[in-house]
Amino acid sequence: MKVYSYIRLTSSDNDARTYQNQVNDFAVANRLGRVQFVVEQTTLVKDWEKTQIGILVSEAKKDDLVIVPSLVMFSRSLIQVCDVLQHFHSKGVWVASVEQKLTITGETNDFNGGMMQCLTMVSDFERKLVSMRMKETLDRQRSLGMKVGRPVGSGRSALDAFSKEIIEAKKNGESNIVLSRIYHTTPQNMSKWLKKNMPKDKSSEFECKLYVVGEDDDEPADVRTESFATAGAMVRALVNFACEKANRSYTDYDVMLISDHQQGSYIFISDSELHKGFILSWAASDDLPVISQMHDLRINVLE
Image (cartoon, rainbow, N blue to C red; front, side, top):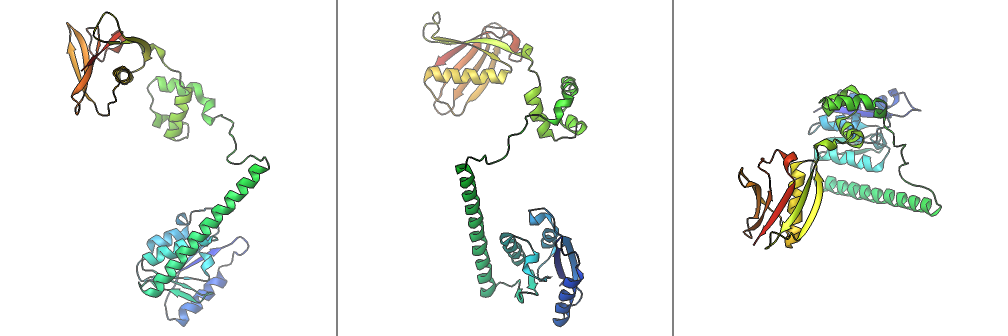
């Protein structure tokens, strides 16, 4: 069994010796042996799991003892104090408070179970009070015409100063990860910036005339002209267009590409459950990857 002591110092109280003496006296009186002290200065970190007490919670093992001069040492928030105690109890770690003259054992019994239940209720009640106070404050500010929430940003990015360099590097095939390292940002932020500022290459787009063919092939029921950047976008548009004209709604599709250099290329899309489908075809002898050659796309709806 190891004996720890956690001491959190405030900015106005930087001397840990007073608290260490209290803990040592408690350890001597109870014959606990040597105490390992964990001393931490108060920080602005709100998540207690990222502080020294969080490290102590993860390192302490069953039947270890943690002594604190007072339970308020764990955190300035009642909710977090209860959370720390619950984590210690779940691991079977004993907690002793000198000021409160309270010892919470790591054993599972009715007393400890009742105490943990009370702490849980107090923690939930405190959370509701905090939420209620926050909502009341926001409602009061809104009623007075005050703006609440996060302030509107300038809309500028630190990457704007290097826009020409970034765009040129991206055109040369540089990856977002490498660019984010060069300009000291995250890959997600770099991707977002490129999506907003990267000029679109319209030369790779192609225009397709979509039309649905009914019983009479000479008179198309409907015609729609759209531009697509990728073959995938074209197929999605064709599927939606065919479903719309056929008054059908498909959830799963079986897609099969059929290439015939004499008749052209076809995409057959069918519903495996209803055994119905339609053919998407274009009058071109090129295969699917050569999307720049596709123009007049024909949709034959099959019954």
